Amino acid sequence: MKLAILDRDGVINHDRDDYVRSAEQWRPIDGSIEAIARLYRAGYTVVVATNQSGLARGYFDLDDLEAMHAKLTELVEAQGAQLAAIFYCPHGPEDHCKCRKPLPGLIDAIEAEFNTSAQSAVLVGDSLRDLQAGLAKDCRLILVQTGKGQQTLAQLEHHPGSYPEYTLEGHGVEVFANLNSAVGAVV
Image (cartoon, rainbow, N blue to C red; front, side):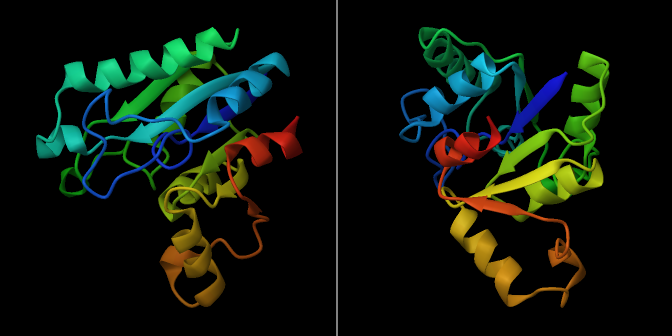
């Protein structure tokens, strides 16, 4: 199985410092929906893995989150493609759960759901925690410069090997402008 694991906010849709709180605020980044469709047509099982601490913080509720995901799913289906699943962590950082990235719990759940290994799966994220979760599962790490991607790239460039939280040096993180260009290199 060819597996692609995508972060949501900042990779597929525009991120907000005050959290994306509704389907109305959820806006796809130009080309991201088409990129998902290209992955699907190339035979990838496309899965979203996203931290959604806004639930724990009370910024939105489960109905709001489901409406955002319904909008994403409908846009992908309108391109003749489909997402295999959307996995999310509803916890806040203080909950110390195993599913919140940078821990690999969401990827563990994806492996269990699809009875496969995520080793060498394509993992696309815009934050260090996305990459760290993928690193723990030996994924192909792709950083996009949308969302928090430029800040993440600056962290990696300015702190190579200096701090444990930035230890991705030597793991071949590929960097692309956005999901669309990343998918162009994958398929």
